[in-house]
Each structure stands twice: as structure tokens, then as C-alpha cells.
Length: 133
Image 1 (cartoon, one colour):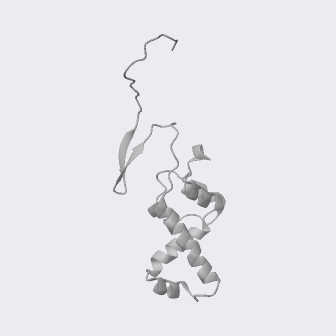
Image 2 (cartoon, helix red, strand yellow):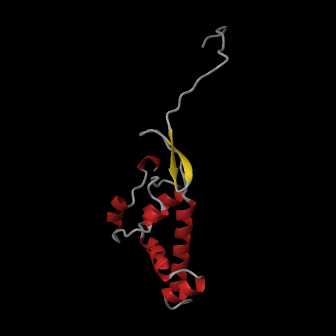
Image 3 (cartoon, one colour):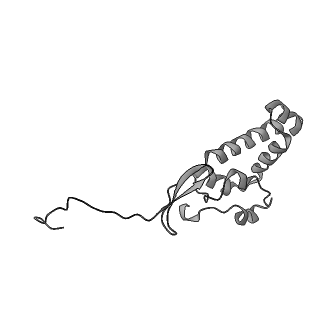
């Protein structure tokens, strides 16, 4: 704009997005290639924190077995065993989840599904949003 040019009273801005439901919540989804804000999934972060806490408790000898720890925590053994597997995730995947760089598809249910133990193979199973590195 140049000096003296009239300033419009109304500015219209078009932002392409759509609303999708995820886990009972509504979320804004941007078009492919648009920059997404970082979105830390507190449910997955909490599960990671619990997994590493439980691992420390087991490794310290405070509890002799997962069964004993599960009973003390009031949690089903099978659930605890699945959450404890999160300690086997590659460090870059854990860091990405903590930074909110995981893709929207990476939910707690998804990370609790079986995944390869080899760190190099985990990237395909648990995709990260490489645009936010």
C-alpha cells in the first residue's frame, strides 16, 4: 500500500482446514504441506513417564516382579506389561513424542500395539512428523 491509499475496513482471510473428531475431541486438521503446531499428547507422555518409573522400580529391586508391582499399583499385569514395553522405544521416538512431533495417528492405543524391538525398524511402525524436526 502507498501513502494516501485508502485502508480497507474489512480484510478477509481464507484458511483451508477441516474439523475431525479424535478420541471424543474435535481437532483442526490443516491441508497437506501446511505447518502444523506441535501437539504434545499428554496421554502418551503420561504412559511414557509411568513406564520409565516402573522400570526404575523394578531395576532397583524395590519390587521382585511385574506381578508384584502391578498388584501394588492396582493395575492389571497385562496392561502394565504393555506400558513397560514403551521403555524399549528408540530414544529419538521418545524425544519426538515428548516434543509433540509425532503424527496425529500416534496415539496411546497405537504405541501400545506390538512394535519391533530394533530401533531402526521402529520408525516405520511409529511414524514421526519429520516436518517438525
